[in-house]
Length: 207
Image (tube, rainbow, N blue to C red; front, side, top):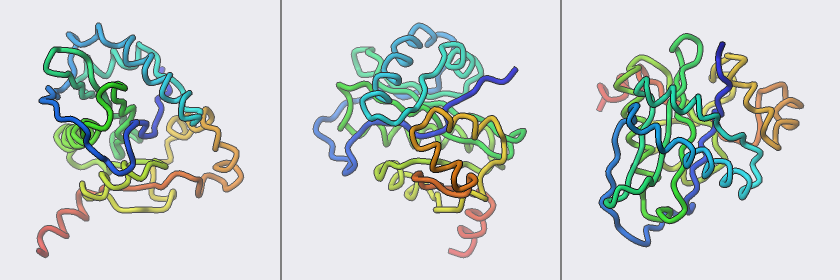
C-alpha cells in the first residue's frame, strides 16, 4: 500500500536568501543510522506548516524511515552534530517523474544558506538515482523558484506534471485545494516548474 506523501517544497527561509551567519554544515545522503532524528524532523515540519498557514500535512515517521533506508533523502548537520535540515525524493508513474519534497531547515539555521545547499544536494540525488526522470516542483515560494531556475528548471503548465492520483491526493490538505479543484487541476496558486534531462542535454549540446 502506498503512503500519501506531501509533494510541495516547504522550506522556510528568507525570500531574498540573505545569509546572516556561516556554518560548515555536513550534508549527506540519509541512511538507517539517521532514523533517530525522525521525530525531530516531523515535529519541525508540522510546526513550520502551521506557522505559515499552508495546510501542508506532517509526514508520518514511517515514511521518513522508509526514505532513509532506501537512500532517498538528504540530511544536514551543524558542525557540533545537531540536526539542521532534511529533504527527500518521491517517485511517480513508475519513475517517469520524481519530485523533491519536505525541504525543511531547523529554525536556528535559517538564513544561513543551508536551504539552498540542501536543494542542490537533493537535486543531485535525483539525477544520480533517476537520471532519465522528469524532476518537478510546485511551490509558492520565490526563493525556491529562484533556486529551481538556477538548477535548470523551467516554468510549465500543470498538464506537464504527473497524472498520478496519489500525488494530487496530497493537495487535499492544502488550504488552496478548493482553487485547484475549481480549475480542474489545471492551475492553482503554486508555480509548476520542471527539469527535463532530455531538453537540458539538447540545450547543453548547442552551447
